[in-house]
Image (cartoon, helix red, strand yellow):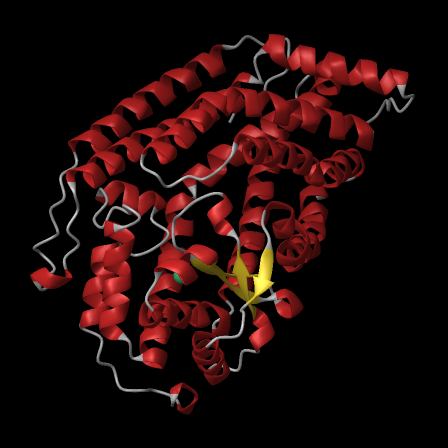
Length: 433
Ligand SMILES: [Zn+2]
């Protein structure tokens, strides 16, 4: 991604928009022209095939358009900040505020300047993304999935904009280090990012997540006893299983593992507790136990840290190619570099998505195996997957290109097939019931 100074022309931006439009056209053709074809090819018995009403097919097709459109729209939005008019305006507002507050720095931006710039960008992007945010909300409401109120929507936006400033110290330190260590700054930032990234992962379930949702322990019931004994098989304490009040936002069923070390926990949504039969809920928890035991959150964190290193190396390479800029352009680039870095992060994340998705699918397969080995609930697991397709309208057989690029889980059909054909003997004593 080209890093632009406010004075340069906006030809790279125009080329980028053209590229995005071509990409959008390809995406639309892929999303619209797709017809489910593997329903028969996996040889699943008809009683275990999800039966989707036309309404579900329509929902899936519309969702593909909205989600892909949202990704492209946001990429264009974040890139538009690099256009001279917007960039100059943001830098000018930041400079005026920093002069008033007397924090103006000559060599590299002061921390407060970075915070102001990040806030301006986050507010601009929130407004830019509003059409797709509202479209997504209306679409989810039309199909009776979303329960998000206007006040929750606005509260989430305020929290999202505020939390965008959490990376301010990283930018601030990066600017300072770059003036002192022209070649090695990125290595120092990378090493600094690792404990920061791991700290955020530890604190996420105990500090960040409660800002968005409420959590409580399982209340006493025969089901709780079954869940607790299932967890004990994997050496997990009762206190590591929490219930999230997800029904404030959506009626979809879900469970997940979050946190590492002292904050690691399995979270079940209140929708799952309310809507799933006991055996399907236990099958779902068995899968999450797999993530917990294999420490997939920590593994993802380590992979994320490696990704940060790769990104910083590429950023340094791109910046070194800009070394021939004039002094004036360089000084103007200080704050202007922030949106340029954000654009390059967005493009980097999109390009590396297939790698991320592939690793995630491998974790999911492993967690499925663990759950099936531990619970032996093969048919309930298959029925849980059928429910995801029939109740939550999750596409059981998405277009292969989208599954390759964005599919964080194996497809619903693959998981049904896997559960029904799963008859592997118990491999370790730990799994014995
Ligand atoms: Zn999973």
